[in-house]
Image 1 (cartoon, rainbow, N blue to C red):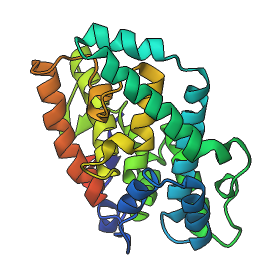
Image 2: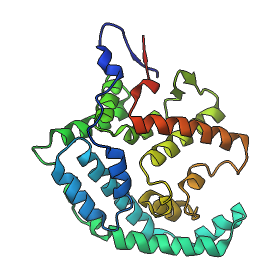
Image 3: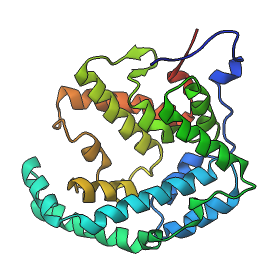
Length: 262
């Protein structure tokens, strides 16, 4: 599926989604690090601004996913993963325990209903975001319009799950099975980096979740995303290079890299 806008059917502004007034990606990054995510979610939910409900919803989702893994994860899995990677088992074990404790401390309140479970009736941006994001799963003729809506709220990175299965970027196709795998993980890594705080990614809820879910506990989301390829491999280098290009696009909420104009 190629995302194309036919000339004459949509105005030129389609290819330049309105830029959000605030850097909502930077705000989301702070939320993923907040020692009190519920306070962050409550505050973002009440703002009723472009991207604020999206931030609240994503942190809520991440805490709930983290809670699930914290409840069932085993430290033995982190030790086994360290051995398989030739890393220090004691270091992985220590980080696993820290991740489990951090999630229980920061996300315990999300076992119950929280503000992000229901948008405010007056928050039109929340309604538009929810409709557009769920619409992406349909992969229909509204895909481009839905992506534009997310970008207009500074939330293009939240579409990574759908963009990852459309192996085309900046006019380049990724058609072989290996290239498709590289593409998927590059998108995942780019979306994370575009919405995280550089230098403090080890405390990000998504990194903590990855540690508990997979045993990759070195404090690096990159290690988790690119686990299939060893350091220095051609595939890993390709994924890193592509991810950097995508990260810049996500940060700019620039849909032109994904949508072709006919």
